[in-house]
Image (tube, rainbow, N blue to C red):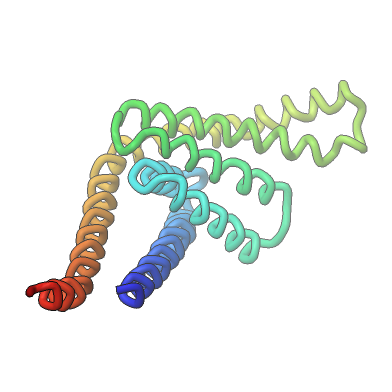
Length: 206
């Protein structure tokens, strides 16, 4: 009995690692697939769906792996700090949705699009703190933010549209997959315990 339970735990651990790795890979592939369209991406909808359907335990490691892979692919820059802050926080916020409230998910996507640009400008400004006066830093932040405002608006609209179209179907699919895996695990655990139960009951018969 203990051996079978140990094997089931090992299988569950392996399944968890495979799922997280696949989720992170899908984030990277999705980003690359739309990289030719400025500020149009599917990472936002995937992170929100991961958080909503599977929770922090899955979305947090998946987003951190995604950020690490992006750094390995494109090198080190100010955007690395932005990624490691923004995507995990979006996933944690999305985990509160619990796969419901499509309008809230759309608003979250739109707000995150604007927040992405704001954080980008703020983090980039922090990297030049030692070179500019306080007044010049304020001007630098405003100019940098306004210069990218058009791209932020494109990001907001595209994220809201993709989340509006894909959020509920993707959450439904992920929940079905997770539920199916749960029942398979429960069934395998029960079946593994049957011989033990049968032998024990046979021995207790007078």
